[in-house]
Length: 63
Image (cartoon, rainbow, N blue to C red):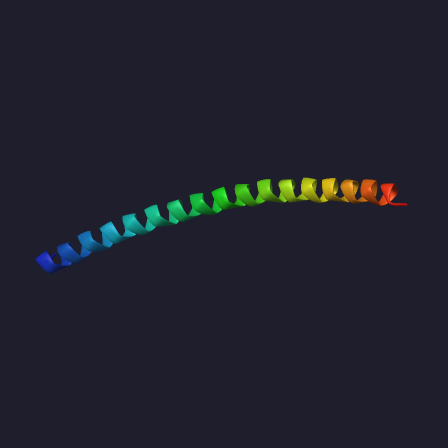
């Protein structure tokens, strides 16, 4: 193997490791975002339920 081939092989190995690390990082970010979305969905669901109850209560008082 020539010096150039060794350099290219080493560079490709570094790039491969860097790519794998970036893929893991992005995967972790996606998982974190999915957890946040689930939390927000729950909060919005509860807020909508509470808003509906409040609207029903106020509608009953105005009759």
